[in-house]
Length: 433
Ligand SMILES: *Cc1c(COP(=O)(O)O)cnc(C)c1O
Figure 1 (cartoon, helix red, strand yellow):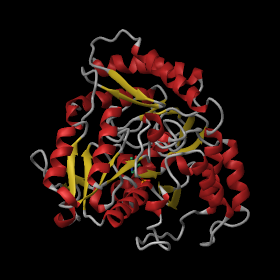
Figure 2 (figure 1 turned 180 degrees about the vertical axis):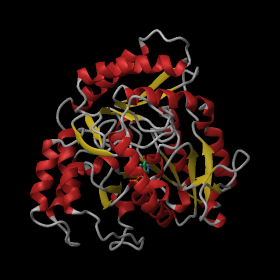
Figure 3 (figure 1 turned 90 degrees about the vertical axis):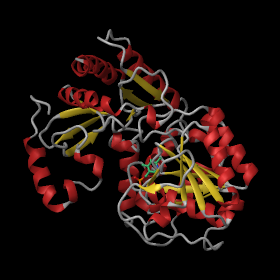
């Protein structure tokens, strides 16, 4: 645990929280289990900065796990949300704000015709899978080891033994019968995908992938692999789902589909789309979306779907993202950070930062490329733990796990980044010691 960092208030709040919530949290990674010590309770955010309950200030690279691409409290979002709230929080009836956000997205994205708003990434993916099954009238789905798609039953499944086997559930409470409908394959492995299609011929409804896998390190895939997935799905009558809950509006306004120029059949969004409010969405071409109720017989609904306050935050945020050079500037900042840190003379060569767009992943590894989760050295997480603690002492906040990526927002200034480079270099000396 970081010494020199005041954590009395956070520690007190955490003790209380443990009496209210399992592990003291409402989402597991927040408990700081993998880095040790007390989670920081956050009181406030502004721009690139956050403040904890003990008054410590940090430069934030977690950004609420990705949604806050404009940083904290961007005035455009705050103003729009305040105006909307004055008219009421929710109606359970259509509002013009849903049209506005959908129009903003669909007009600027050639990969999708129609969409449906939901309230989380998990819900978006769960609905997309149902839609793929409804459309193809098939049951099995293929997912990849090292991709996270939220916590719905059919996706909390990990690889069984053998190259192509059905999965086993990765959480208690999921019937094995459900897990058997999910086939889990290694990323970046065409052979395994072909073998799965041979074994389960006409029963594969879809392949789902994070086109930029960023929930278990950053396992960058080649365009050719994504293209291969699209081709094999087309040939076999299966659908390709791009889970763009992280990469959507992050790699560019059209996400990974646009970045790699590969056309998925269904896309899921979350995180950035809601400007910090709980929003998810799934989208596809008309021919597929027309199966969703009330047009079609694939049922999906939500009391707070398209919530006006959440739509407002999304509209304000995505409007900023569409401004000229928005993504170019973010990428330049990320490059400044990564190059600045990697220019350090380190005591050994076992550290790298993988990055794409404005996503970065600090990893303790000798490998120049990591494309599969099996290539991540679990033992190296001890070094991450030291890095994390040393960075906190130097007022730099990364998500509390070495398997998580960092995010740069438009609010991060060159000065923030230069401070971070210095802090990182010092912290790395400690971690590599
Ligand atoms: C975060 C995430 C999800 C789940 O979204 P929630 O809003 O946490 O339910 C699904 N897929 C990917 C790729 C994600 O990064």
